[in-house]
Image (cartoon, rainbow, N blue to C red; front, side):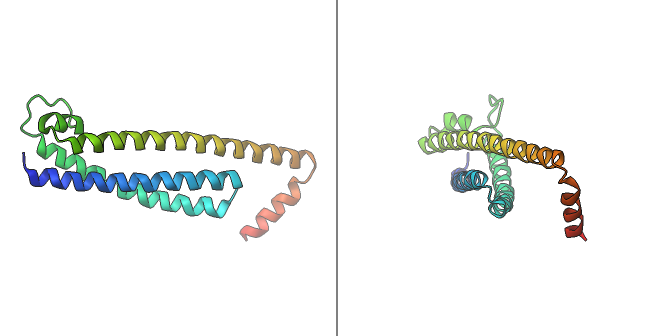
Length: 151
């Protein structure tokens, strides 16, 4: 097992931890924008999230490649995981990083679920508002305005 590869892995893990921290911040800002119904803010956050997620996917792929390399001689490894690498090396830093990543991923999942609920409520509000407008006979004017904006 190459110490150089373990050092590279730790560097990647640090970048992932930093990236997931940024994602948590973006999700919190997104939550605020959803509550405020700030469409521009939501659009901007969405673009930032997309960029960050691509970056995180690259780090993830690089991490998995390094783990494969590090564990290629381990005949007992059923899965290529940080836990298994920690078991082989006893490196407490790897254990701490793994636990930090797990905690961050749980936070991301919770924020995503909450934001999803906010989006569903907003969509429901829009649908009921459109139904009200339709029942009030305002639909025709709304459609004309929408069509003229597209032209």
